Length: 267
Image 1 (tube, helix red, strand yellow):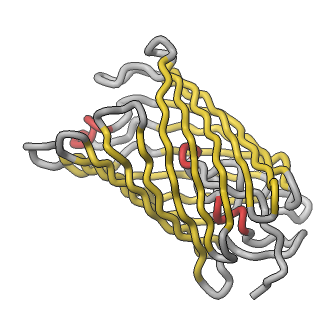
Image 2: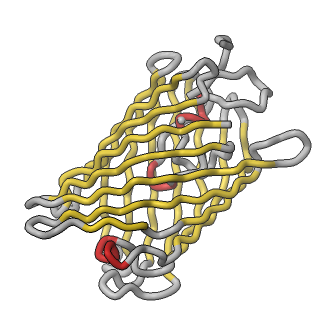
């Protein structure tokens, strides 16, 4: 195992959900890095990988929702670099368990994503952009908790290593819908993140993410959430990353919390 590695820009940014968590590498090597693993759900990190995750939503007043996610990214580039561009997918299985009614399970909406890493400096900045489309493919049984529409989003993100073990990351995206859902209507919103990551050991990091969503369809109303999380690596080559988190809505009285956990394998 390599041990003389610099901690690269890293943070878990949940909303960007899939272009890249913690491994060790020396400068200049095209291999899994600490930043890759910590950013397992961030579009600005592009590395070939498979991710499996689960999100459990506890609803106020009873009832719950569950989302099991299978996602993958293929990273590629030119001139010997394999992390310049990426294409990815995300396919969820949804379960709706309302209070006092039978539960329903079915495939959710398929999401496809492309991204481009513009800056990848191990000693400082990492930045990139992405575009994604989420199709209206959910099964009829789970349409009540699906998007009910085809929607798209484009955005960019950046991360900066303030110290070897402390990184700040930020991102901003705009999402809109191509059509209107029966009960969800149209989508037009800005979503921003500010994330702090502190590496407390060679294999473990702590993260705190703030998310702000401005819904342009509701008189630009702002919704805020906080999501503390922990990430760590396993395996002889530390190319397997694990994470667990809890997203806490500050303005949504219908949701108590969203518990998340998952694993990412880089190849």
